[in-house]
Length: 383
Ligand code: CLR
Image (cartoon, rainbow, N blue to C red; front, side):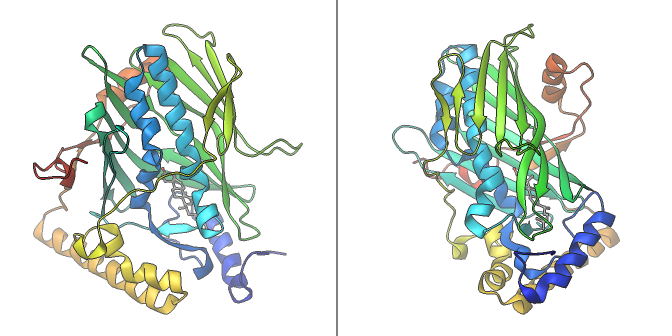
């Protein structure tokens, strides 16, 4: 029967939601979903998943060789996957439909400097509403690390699952000992959202993603889930190849949501079973009106407390205000200015590094950080 995990009163609405997914392809963000599946968290908060183990991010700066730096980047990347793709199941019971950010929505946060790891700052801006695109910038200046990226999704429906192709990429820039910079192009895995029929969606990663270093080292990461013939969820295998070679130099294998092994040494490669560290944000009263948690506070409260009437009334207020803004802009012949990012049609780093591992790298756009976040001000806290 449909919707084992769906409250009785919402079963028919869940069934029609599933039907509508089948017919709407591309962008699911504006589909109306039944209340039980709504999350009170906006997609602008998601880039924080990149840094919930700030010590692993900082450790990239300690590597002394190109090879070790690529390994440190891979370890940090694999260690973010549990947060990125399974944390809503742990926190909210299942994967849920996040709040669809408005154009110009902001999310600021940081991880404090503890034990010499340096302070890590996060700046996020919703740079497009339709289609939804989120740009982010994360840096740890004391370690010479900066991650710039953007995230969008193209969804389709296949065999009862939602398939999510991630659009966008991230570039990690590392100041290397002795001068100079190393760059890493990070591409993103494909998602399959299963468990829809029962009303308890969860994510499985599929296909491959890559981390290409400007030094030539490449990590190719392959994802596999539970198969029809058994096998475990959330498996991955990463193969590291040296510059100019296709021969596996190092191989790492295991479950990205728990632990994996370094097949050369037999030792543990990554372990995310211990606690992670959520991003620190300002108090809501001290936030700018465009900051996500302030903007959505009454909607989020309604969802959390099961008061969906309030939630949908407050959501409509925000959406109507946005519609009016767009009309006014159109009439005045202006467009909404981005605050922290500049859009470029083609990312030269993406194309240069893409050429190292792809025969025909496509062109990709990017959002370049302007360096004007709240933490870049002269009086910003440094600890
Ligand atoms: C956003 C970028 C993050 C990783 C990530 C994790 C979960 C994804 C999310 C991204 C995009 C939006 C997403 C979500 C899971 C479900 C949700 C695909 C890729 C869709 C829009 C909601 C589907 C609705 C059902 C769950 C009911 O780094």
